[in-house]
Length: 431
Image (cartoon, rainbow, N blue to C red; front, side):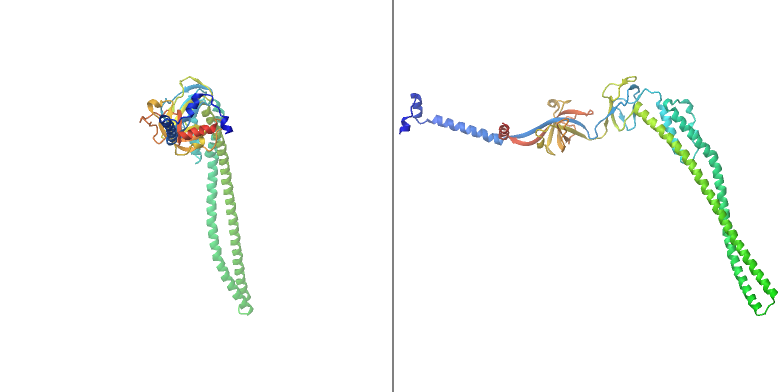
């Protein structure tokens, strides 16, 4: 009671409001407000839309376009290929000013190829140098002269000393075959004489027994004895002659081996010298090509990133050409910042909006996440996502876009759906 007595009202209006029960309008108003709030909460939970992870993307080929860079500073003297020309690997696309002409380099290449083909069969290679007087090889001259001298030395040996050595080898080979025939005959003769000697020995033994028994005179026994020892001496002489013939044929075979070895060694050394000079010329050609020629390493379509003309000076490391590979599928290389990257999964759809083709007019390109990088690029503070283009460059508005080397734009990865309520809650969690 004491507590109630302490309550005082400062206004008659407030007393009047608190003293009456609210009427129906007020009660229904409160109910409607409550239902509206519940409806908002319900629909914010019910309505969902996908979360988007955006990043820059470059559309290129599976095998990216190759940039052809100038290796030195110089003046353009030849541009054999025009923009958008189809080229194959090995095609010349630019030549720079230099002292050695391209036709001289090509002549040297053909010369080296011919030398390598003919030298393996010990053929005359001097004729290959005919017509070289019309060329001035400038920085190549010293190496060329050394190669020519070695080839002349080789050719002189092949056409003179080598032929003489071959004749000696042929003669010795004939002698060896002759001695082999003689030895074969001697062996047969010894074999026959051995049988005669055995018979003579038996005859001698018989005569000796008869002489011991006084059945024959001594003179007859001595004749048999002398005949046996004469045949035995002749048999030993035949064996000695066979041994000498075998020694002789061994000496001839040694001579033959020495001649062949020395001949092969001389030819091998001469060839080695030639190949060393060829390697030097090849090295010079390779250096010349790197400095004064640009040759396409791949096949494709040639593109000029900037204007080029004959007699135009270019600087080292200038990007002069871009070669777009033929029949290479298109892919997208996307850079995604770390924020929200964990939501990116393989197979998620990607909407690509290209800078070259405004999406309001051309639409967007559909893609799918093919691979997701596991490592972070600290230099660009991003992760790499590879995007597959199932429809190629056909857009959502069914327009086919033209591919030009590389296309840059913005890509949106459509991740999991989130309700409005979840998004509001996530916002509050950040606070």
